[in-house]
Length: 125
Image (cartoon, rainbow, N blue to C red):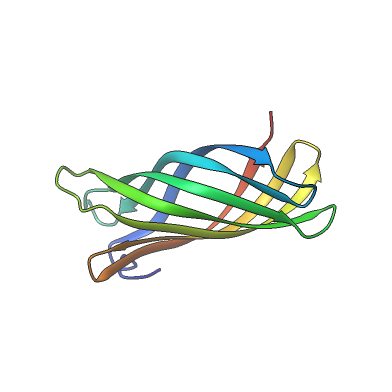
């Protein structure tokens, strides 16, 4: 997706976040992680270290909508530009400590956009 679609077809990442319960319906916190866009045809992968503020709104007992907003530091290959990081997401609670997450991950770098549509899981500890 975005300007990277001819360069990469797979994004893999892991994030850790800490959320404070602001109210019964709203959580806010911080998130950080590592995400890589694997290169096609032997091209180098693009690796980023995102650091962001996180917000979650519990729409119902099972559904949550949220967003992570921050900065993605380009770490691989050396000299990779950094940029604005944004991740709107929808989560479905499978259990008290497990959610299925559908998210759109975007990194705006200069006049380009590196993005992906992601499906994943979130574990609560």
